[in-house]
Image (cartoon, rainbow, N blue to C red; front, side, top):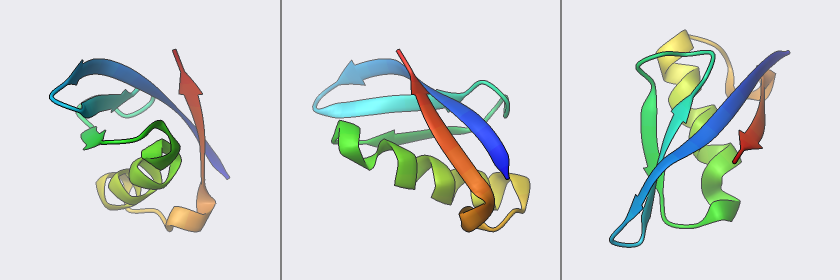
Length: 61
């Protein structure tokens, strides 16, 4: 299991821009706080080449 920490970097126009501490360069965005874990899993899966099921997401504020 890979553990990643998502951070909210910006919030404008109803969008939350997210980065991941352990994956510099990975950036994604969501509209709702509840969407963060799934969005990070999906983006990190492609970015890191890992199955989404192997990614655990913690949201840091």
